[in-house]
Structures are given as C-alpha cells and as structure tokens.
Image (spheres, helix red, strand yellow):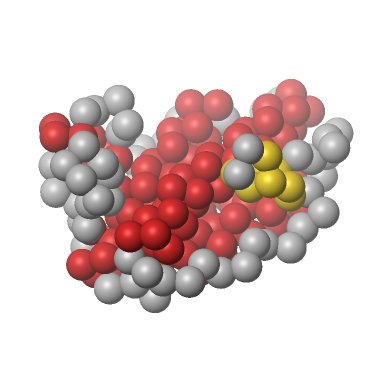
Length: 177
C-alpha cells in the first residue's frame, strides 16, 4: 500500500503550485471571467477545496461543510449563471486552508490507525488523495491558461516530484507508476 504521508506531501505540493498561480493576482483578476459562460479563477479555487471537502466527507468521515454559504457557489453541478457571487479572496484562501487542514487531520487519523477500519480506509485514502491531487492540477491547468494567455502573467515552474508527469498537457500524480 502507498504511504499516505507521502501522498499528503504531494497534496501540499499541488496546493502550493495552485497558490503560485493565484496569490500574486489582484482581486479583480481572481474574479474576472474570460466570457459569460466561463468560470473565474476564484471559482476554480473554491471548487478545488469544495470537492476535496465533499470527497473526504463522503468517503471517510461525515462532517459539516467548513463554509455552507459556499456550497452552492462552488458546486459544478450548478450552472454558472445560478452559482451566485464569488467570495472575497480572503474568504477563498481561508476556505482552502480550512479544507486542507481537515484533509490532513482525517488522512492523519487513517494513517495513524485512529479510525474504525484503518486498513480499509487506508486503501480508500490512497485513491482519494490521488484524485484530490489530480483534481487540483486539472483546475490548475485552466487557471494557468487564463493567467498566462488572458492576464499576461508568467507561469511558475512545474512542481518537482518523481510522482508527477504531464499527460495530455495536464500535471498528473501517479503513485503507482
């Protein structure tokens, strides 16, 4: 079985890359949309965390949303025009950080055997973390395209990890390869 601590480091590496893509942008750039049917960078940032929370909640531990007011806004099942206004960059950052803390806490409990079915949940957690990492990078691709092509900012270098490769233009984490 793959080391969950190593995958948590990959999750942190993916989040740090996301931060490199957006933390130097202005609030106006974070909420700007290339066209009316396109989501802003800020939506992708919230959506990455929203999915992480719901995957952890639904696959490993039922717990309340860290910011219920963002649930409908960040859910990709809601059409863009019905999502509502994006939160401030401060609220987005806090939401992302809170979700990451919860991911670490829950995966840490699983890795430490502090759950009812530690072996079963460890298997689930490997797939879960791999999906969270790859989902982060999936949206980073779009964020990076808007950052470079529409907003004119340079892209940061790709993260350095033996577990990462580019596949179809996307960064992908493959702990089995």
